[in-house]
Picture 1 (cartoon, rainbow, N blue to C red):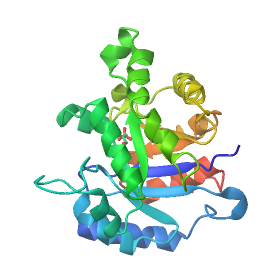
Picture 2 (cartoon, helix red, strand yellow):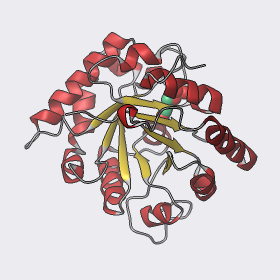
Picture 3 (tube, helix red, strand yellow):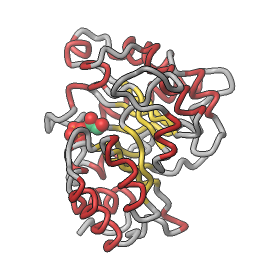
Length: 263
Ligand code: 13P
């Protein structure tokens, strides 16, 4: 089964209104850059901060989807500062991250919380992108697979529910030690972990490995993207820092999809 690659940018808590507009103009001016040619399909997604979701959804060219960086596990109610899945959809977004390591670390989100968030996103019609990844300490203590198995195990039912439904659900492997450090996982390490995650997905009843896309995230840039995406089980990227500049993001799209040399 061919899985359409995904190139996604997570802006985290960066950029202002004028930057969002200028970014959208830069993408529109560049055109789909071969990305939407039938033989070269790719899903391009950007995750702005929630206040700019509506702006980004309106301003971006139609080959760029917009998603939320987080989604609340409840339908709505007295949750000051949080955003409900229905509100994300209403703002024009169609994807949502769940369980980014910065949410797990700074907001104490547990595997169970992440599963509930992903389920709520899916129920509202959003494509959930569930983030998993080990810390440096966990890797050094040889706990990588155990940590990933627990994180993935918590969301298997959600991924199964998403199976075959539209764009389905997505897993993003983001080793915490590679995020924002400039120290990407080597293609060998990333491929080995992705292979493990794929096997776990395939081991679930019915097998989810063929349909679930697995992204890599952690210091992805124009220099390392081609080697990473060349690996069988790496279906695309979730990019932080290198997605903040539209020229850099476009370059990674082009290099990763083979639609040019990235210039
Ligand atoms: P960097 O690409 O800046 O390392 O961030 C990765 C990330 O956390 C994307 O969600």
